[in-house]
Length: 323
Image (cartoon, rainbow, N blue to C red; front, side, top):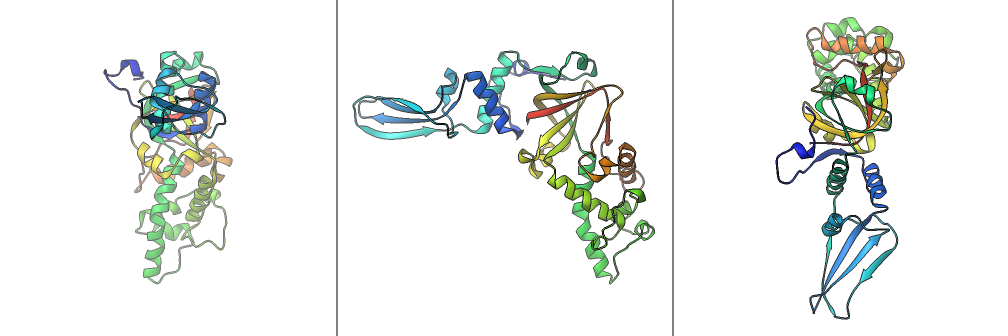
């Protein structure tokens, strides 16, 4: 169910962003206001008069003026004062989240955000449109698998050392292991293996996992999958600069709201490969499906999403993911 601030209970409507593209948010806010001032100093005089210094190119609406904010480093300014001596000085600050709340309210009040949640709505969407989707976070299957292996691989290596054994180098030996991580790594399709002779992992599959983990860590963008209650799936391309491990943990198995710009309408016959940021994604959808299937079936069932998002779906460049 998609809902707006006007549909919520009375009182304050406070959005808490777990992901926020601050430059995008500030540029939108500055465009609406013709510029943004982001700092206010208030000096109290003996007579009770106030002296205010405003930094920036232009003032926001009256509500932002009343709140004060952080200094964005803009040049210029103005001041008003009387001749009384100054007794005290105060300075008020905005946070990025408080500015987002203000911008979000502006956009909602002016009907600039389109709520989406059903595949049928894609016929009316266009690239560049500002939209909001409320739904369940399904994650990224390859990132979820890699996070699992990254957490277990140290235990696999330590187990081999404790037993005085050499690291397993064949898939057959890996499949006989009592450790689920080793068994899963050994199940990776042989054609996906990238040979790395000096690698210390215990199987060819584990070496591939290490390579993909490196690819994900160095990627400038993370693909996140959301699904609205109306059935629409959205691939949210989050910037690594604002997407951290903490963000991923906050999002895990929860329902959130995404507001951002549409970058692609995925047609019925089209699809998006969620492993496209890795070496497996380059090999095509079949390779991705085999890899995820190898860790989603049998003894080790991670319960991750499917790696191929089939249309109709939408791709969104997010300004914020919030609750």
